[in-house]
Amino acid sequence: QQQVKQSPQSLIVQKGGISIINCAYENTAFDYFPWYQQFPGKGPALLIAIRPDVSEKKEGRFTISFNKSAKQFSLHIMDSQPGDSATYFCAVAGGTSYGKLTFGQGTILTVHP
Amino acid sequence: DAGVTQSPTHLIKTRGQQVTLRCSPISGHKSVSWYQQVLGQGPQFIFQYYEKEERGRGNFPDRFSARQFPNYSSELNVNALLLGDSALYLCAAKPQPTYNEQFFGPGTRLTVL
Figure (cartoon, rainbow over the protein chains, first blue to last red):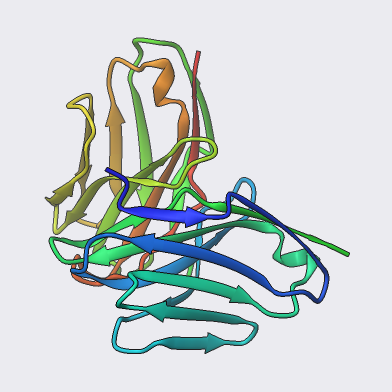
């Protein structure tokens, strides 16, 4: 049972463009929705996270949009830079899985200069 | 403060052998979780420990075991290694089990031949 579906699997954007990655979840009990960034050979690093009581959260160039009724959330990277090239994972937590993160399959982002 | 540290960085074992991976959490972070990340996939939850007690277990066979020490460091043990155990093993730390935000270490890359 795949609790989190992430798309696209890979994404190529030009420098300065907008990168958009989407996630869909099934369990309405989830109440924590983070995005992680992972570079090759490194562990995932928390980028930004949102709770279901707000529809959008922005931190610098990174924005999470949350649609509770559709059970979807997305990551927007504005003014994408080559240094943003990495693998991005959405995750969910909460409900009976309190404290345990369930990750999506990941999106490989490549930003061309 | 130093981040989450893991050792060793890389490890090569043969099928049937046993392996022990180690994790030291951030100072003050008493809860430690272990995740397995197979190449090309998102991390999968294995265990969560808090105050030396198991607080959650993922869908992994009994060949996987873990423990936590009084200083909150942790070890993950895998017995009777299979080729499919080849993965990046990640340790994540947080102040307590109910805290959703987790900080990952760099991981241990295990290769089973």
